[in-house]
Length: 95
Image (cartoon, rainbow, N blue to C red; front, side, top):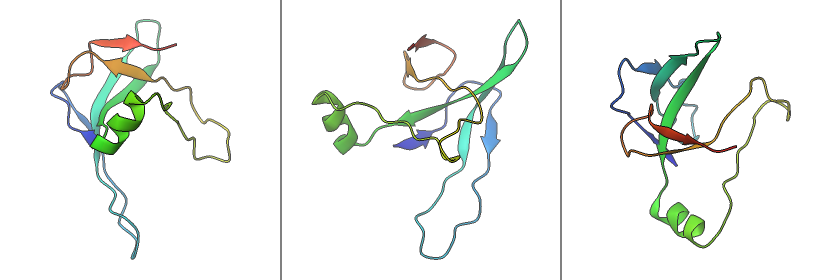
């Protein structure tokens, strides 16, 4: 999956680290930061699956989420389905 730049404003951009020799390119991650009325905040980004990934999803394959921190989440996370192809703020929570 590749991240896409949402139309929501203002954007937050997480800059990609320098690419290591021989490693695949890493891209900047654009998204929005949302503050919650009860306190706290979250960062949301949009990702577009490739044709191969869409075929796998259509065939019933599950979405896999990896947490790269020795298996211990460093923060809660959420998987959602965007109602729009280009905006984040209108979404359907999953779970």
